[in-house]
Amino acid sequence: MEERLGTVVLMCGLPGAGKTTYARQLVRRGYVRLSIDEVVWRRLGRRDAGLVLAAEAYDRLKEEVRREQRRELVELMLAGRDVVVDYSFWSRAARDDYKALVESHGCRWELVHLKADRATLERRLGRRSDEDGADCVTVDRALLDRYLAQFEAPEGEGEQVVVQPSA
Image (cartoon, rainbow, N blue to C red; front, side, top):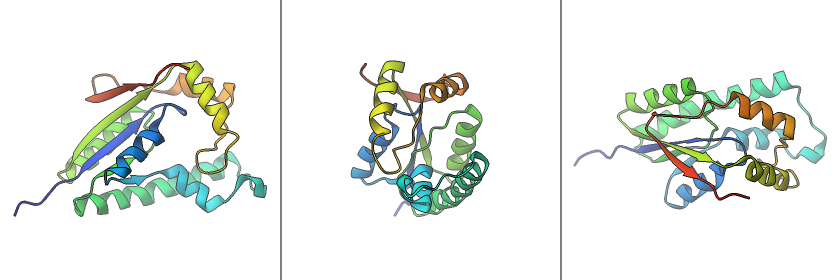
């Protein structure tokens, strides 16, 4: 009997573009979802508890979780599982790194780039800043501007582009 190789879907896009919603749809189809934000949120607890980490400490925690989930991804691939990696994958270097990891384990990757116009991003981000949970990260206009300036949109990387409806 031939061993089944898993598929790893790499989500890519700005905050509010719909990555997590898309990833959760894949979970309903049997995929395992890896999300740095969810693990960080679980470890830090509720934001109304008053815990605020300095940016440097927060970045260290995110990197620690990323390393843990990278190891988990390898274990899942070796088990033949389908996985969705619900990160932003803002840089081509990060996307290429994960694609190489997936290929080195004989699995297939799909890169899904979710796009939305700025008005849609702002509306969604404003709405979720009132929520509690891993998705409640507050992204104000200045931070969104910085994200827009730093984001390296995939082009010619084998990506599937999903354009979200306008606000």
